[in-house]
Length: 188
Image (cartoon, rainbow, N blue to C red; front, side, top):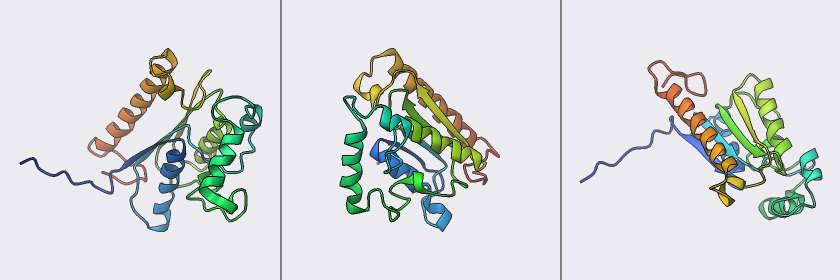
């Protein structure tokens, strides 16, 4: 009989695409309030981070097909109802609203240059870095929302998956090396 693997809540790395990217980003805010799990890293792929939908890229790409400002507004309204675009939106639901991005685990944020979320993703990475954290924005020229899933064989999609795997390997290697620091300054 195979042994059952136990999940160590102190060694969880979260990954999320789109709306699940918002959940993964929000989950990493919880440990600052003493809640678990305490992710040691995050990979956020084209994540929805800000319900306000007012960045330059959201406005620039408002009338294009695929994921655009209108579909983004519909998604946030579905998720938040009447709270959307109010001061009452919880930071766990729209993580870009968190005023203090300190204490977050190492984060990789991915977007295409033709991504409606491009600028909120770059702003998120910048705020984490400004607070002393480790954030790597990965921008893929010509990529649109979900490009690597919708066109998996395209060279750009293969490049994006390569970059993602390299970041994951690098992050997980640091976490598993003897004396390697985990995302919150503790040793694993």
